[in-house]
Image (cartoon, rainbow, N blue to C red; front, side):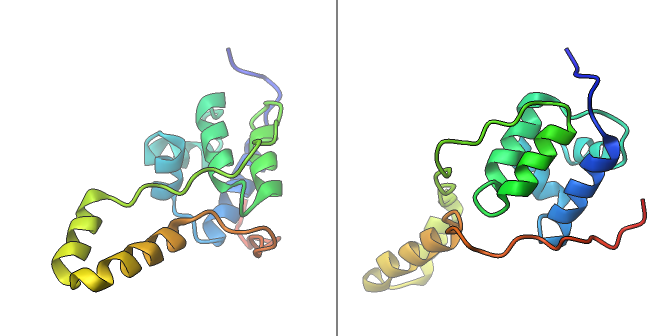
Length: 138
């Protein structure tokens, strides 16, 4: 059942801020478990985000942008509940691990894999937030 208390304008603004912060619509779609066209329809105010998808996206961006995650869920017409902990970093894709094993000598592989894990880890508290103004026409 859809909640009638949602704001297409606020959702569009929150998604625009995520884009300005470097999150593409395809990436947001992947994080939310939906198609890129659905994210595009959200950003154009054509459809209300479903709770499960908007919550997945919000939880994924929450470590870096907690206020924006909350705004996205609340603008969609749902109650926000802060996640209890930062999500685990995504696993390193098997094809990337295979490339490391192929292109680096055995003594360097562990170091390269550790660097990849560090790069994919959730950001620590205090990292910069997305720009406050998007400069997008509404």
